[in-house]
Image (cartoon, rainbow, N blue to C red; front, side, top):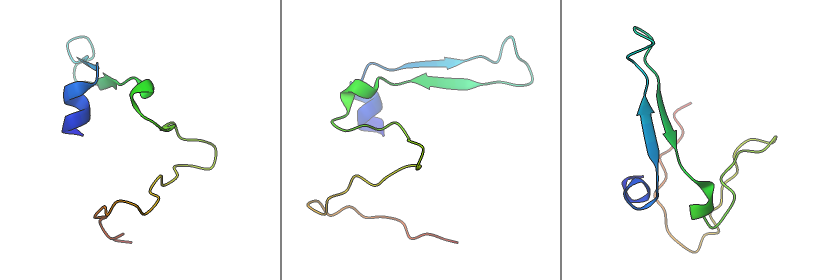
Length: 62
């Protein structure tokens, strides 16, 4: 996440001055910087891992 935020043209806003005590933080991140579609669809999020890279995943704690 830090690598993406450090290299992509992002904008962050904190609107707590007008909306006290209900502060809100927003982050604008262009989706064109990704090689695949990162927007969620009607079926929910999908995994984009093809198994070629070993990525450590946290176990589900249900």
